[in-house]
Image (tube, rainbow, N blue to C red; front, side):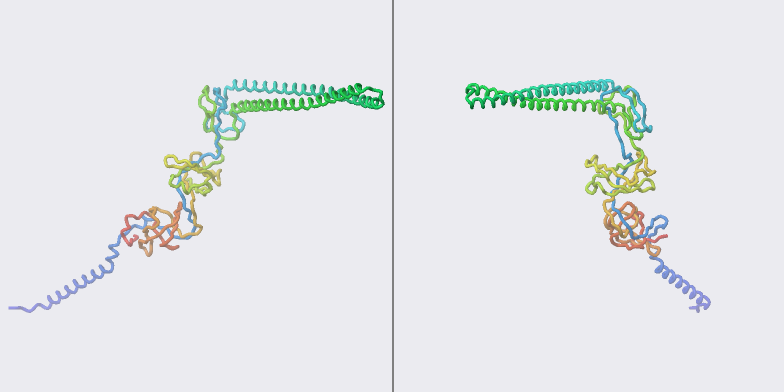
Length: 414
């Protein structure tokens, strides 16, 4: 027989069902309200680098590796085959202009200079004798010419007298004819003497010119012999620092072999190497940025070596501040060759997010979350990147490497 349910128990069961229903309803409400946010991937804010998009200049560049080298380097070579007798300066020594670096045995060169000097003096003496002979010959010719001129005048006077007498019938025709022949013969001899003097002058002038050429050749040889002696003294042409010398006294050096290298450590330039794939855009005159530690130096490409070795090209950069205190020989530097620039562009700081593609997905931060956004980039500079499309000045962008999160449309920043 059925019994009536206890009212107290029934009320208790009803309350229990109401509590369970309320809990389930609350759980469902919370799940629908906060479930999506709980399922979002997240990343600690401290582990990402966030940069603000702004306006400013962007310079496209090619990366290169640079080495600081002295702007002025000089090699002193041996002018002759000689033996090193003494080493006066060694690598690292400062040297003043005119100071000797090495001593060479130049006895043969000194003898060669003395022989050439002797030949020069002999040739000058020969030249003076030839000039004196010319003067004497010309003096003799002038004397003979003057005597012959007087003789011609006398014969002409006699011919005039004989002509008058012949007209009066006082002189025979044979006498007149003889006077005419004597005058003509004397006139021809006078012309021969005048011509002989002219020819003698020209011949002696040619002789003197030849001697002058021989003398000039000998003097050139003497200057070269003197230059060899001066070079053999291995004196510094300017204030500098010795970076290398022959290390052993008594060593035999051949003509043209280096004896010492000097560098002016007051002024520097940059020798850079860059991949040959950038060869098309490299040329003299391009601006360059040289970064040594935290110091940036500006300059221009002065020379680009046209040859490619092992896929690498060499170039030299002339600095705007070649005497900057940070510069030291053989110091390594990061070099950026500026190939293009925008004076005013939308830009963001360069970071590991770059893949090299013109368009890629990045994360833009808004209201505590990072949203995946498609962005197109333009010029890529040393420390900034041009934003061509997809971002506006004032946006915050994550510039860290985010490849592992590109599957998510939104990231929660914790």
